[in-house]
Every structure is written in C-alpha cells, then in structure tokens.
Length: 119
Image (cartoon, rainbow, N blue to C red):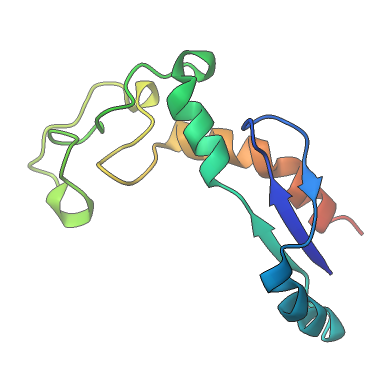
C-alpha cells in the first residue's frame, strides 16, 4: 500500500495519490506487508507561518531560544536566553519547531495516522 499524503492548505482535504517515483518502491514494500506513506509536513508548517494569527502564533521570523536567528541544537543551551512563552513561536530555535507547532502538525496528520492504524 502506498499513499501520497498532501495538505496544500495545511488544513484541507487529504489527497491520496501515488507519487510516480515511489510507486515501484511502494509496490515492493506492499508485497512484504509494509505500508509506505509519504506525508507532506512542509505545507502545514508553511501554513502556520503564513497564517500565524489563525494558529495563535505571534513570532514566525525568529525562534524562542537565543537570538532565534542562528542558534540550534548545542548552540541553544542552558546559558542561552529563552523566551517566556514558547507557544507564541513557531520555532524553538532557528530550525526546530515548538511543542505547539508539533501538536498542530500532529493534529493535521491525525486522520492519516488513524487511517493507518485502524484494524
């Protein structure tokens, strides 16, 4: 089984269409009982950035940790300045989403996950 999952608006209907490059791999995986799923996570995160007010975010151009422009991973550490409310930010540091962003992404993909894990 191969599903191509895309949510162009970040909230819109799920499209189930095979991506040509993955069709062969998907067929081979299905022969072994594997479900191969390609889920577009870029579009929902982009929607959260472009329509940040709709999702309750205030900061989209910088992260919560440090200056928010360069720090990531070990550069964002216990000595770095951290914002008071990470839920107002799409990103925690310069590349990693905040818990709220991950939650919104999960809720966007939840129908897909429910479909995949149904009996």
